[in-house]
Amino acid sequence: MTRLILIGIVVLLSLAFFLQNQEQEVTLRYFFGLLEASTPIYKPIMAGFLIGLLVAAILLFPPWIRGRIDLRRKTKALQEAESNLERLRQSLEKMSGRTHAPIPMESSRDFTDE
Image (cartoon, rainbow, N blue to C red; front, side, top):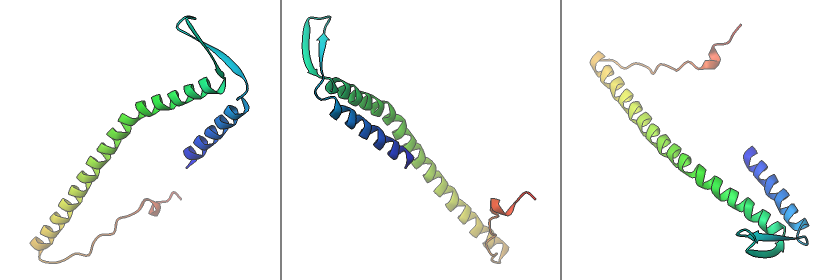
């Protein structure tokens, strides 16, 4: 949530900057002065901002996908371990011939420093 608020603030500040600098002109010289173009100053700054966002998205996308795949793999392994645990509990109950009440898990809040 905090990240979204920060992104919103940056976008609003950028938009305010672009709107305030619409009248100012800048001359861009391409290819060592062979080509020149005059444009409002906000256009090259906005282009740089958008290119930066694109590069950041490209660089962050593969680790995000890798993380999602790893999470899916670990979730599946956890579900298999839980089903194996339940199967082993049932076989233990059959071997002992009686049913046991499930043992409640002790939570970390039960252990307090006094």
